[in-house]
Length: 93
Image 1 (cartoon, helix red, strand yellow):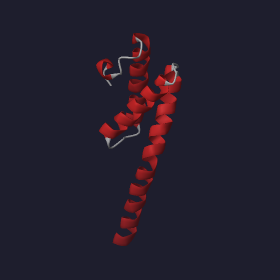
Image 2: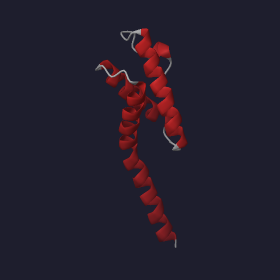
Image 3: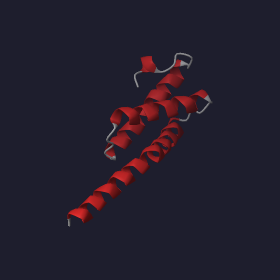
Image 4: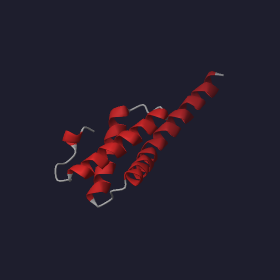
């Protein structure tokens, strides 16, 4: 999320923390091979901004909490897709 898209009511230092946490979390999720990149980045961004809005300023904590929320939100979809692929393989065999 570019700094110009982070709500302006945050102090510049907090906006930089948000940007750092988002980019760091995004790099970690890219290693996981995320498929729906736009919605995943949006989930990360909204989670980090919401946490910062209630006073969380530790960039590592922002990143970790956002990663947890995002992985939890998208993990059932990944498991469901993997299960459907496994079932299709059984049917084909």
